[in-house]
Length: 153
Image (cartoon, rainbow, N blue to C red; front, side, top):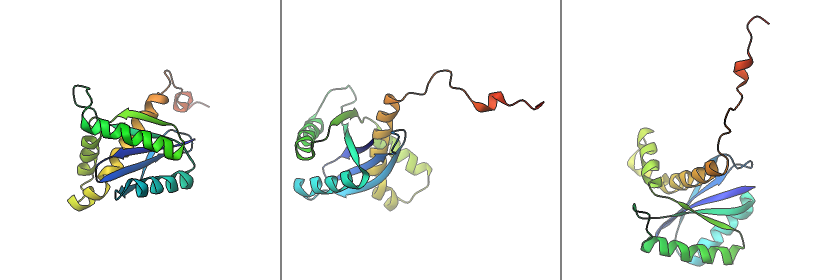
């Protein structure tokens, strides 16, 4: 089951996709918003290309957890997305996802132009990875094969 993560903005939609096992998120693209119809058509194409079964959309909450105008716009988009594509959509708290993405890109020493080009899809990757990690937390007491190594054998 693949999931698309979306960082929904006023000018762009950052897109990330999970691997087939639902363990990791990878950046996919940034959709430049022109119209709702075009945005939905682009997402529909990605749904078919990646065999997507659900969306995770970042919910832009205020730092105190309250919802503002951007969260309201996101809710409206999610309602339209659900109706248009017929797939389940889950919301995920996206606070600081863009900050984390920016920090990662700065650490990678990318130029300002390159950072601007990929920041939205990196934010989508952080949103989706957070959701995936919450669904599949690492198991406690995970067994490491290196612990079984016996040099005497």
